[in-house]
Image 1: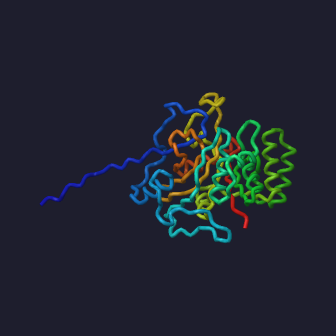
Image 2 (image 1 turned 30 degrees about the vertical axis):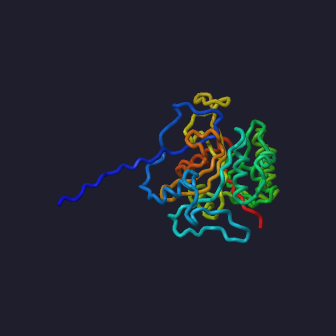
Image 3 (image 1 turned 180 degrees about the horizontal axis):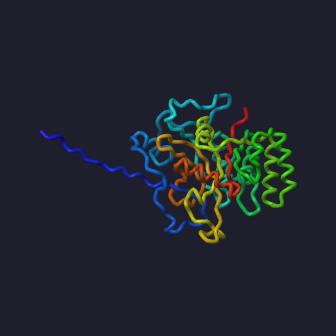
Length: 316
């Protein structure tokens, strides 16, 4: 008897969901196929877990697969059974009300994760803005300190911090920043430096660490969502912008804020909550992105003063 013939089924990976805080919808030519390398075949159970975590599946989740914020007095997480287990933090996604409030909206998402009930309008009202629109990660950190949180900023902004300052104590670092305030001519840079001085005076911590995927995973594994500033232009592979329109010749790169709230080791992808209402590849604002591309996008945020990570924790 001949053995039955087995059909070969081709596995087609869906396109990578991209996002952006764009002020106008991208042209048809801007839409591109997935830019991440194909991954191994995923089990049905893992597909369901990822869909549910991203808000694309049915309600209900496997027990223990989604982590809520640690309560006061509890130990941080870091207790996954294996390094291959996914990390999924239960961060709710909010939509930003306009094109300049992605930062405060992300801060409100992190607040809600920790059970802090300050409303989105109040968060937006209390966060300082740049004269030309938008905000900075350090402004978000200062606002969080005033709202009773501990705050750490992992900065990779070479305009603000000299690479040789990485071993300085808080008092010496504060003196260096004050001297730089008096030395620079750029008004925007001076405001940024003054904001970091205020951040340190309020008890915030500036951390200098080599930036890598391992750093992001370690923070998530402790139950800490990561509010990050990055280059939306690079992350989304979109055209630069000029006067609120796409223009690849006259345009400049655009910065944006998102919240990183999970990691899938097997596919090497981070889960993101994006507040923008104009995301080309995601109506929900919940998607995953290739780890290498996310790391590069954060570092390239230095072009728009956004190369930083903001991590919060409730004071005990």
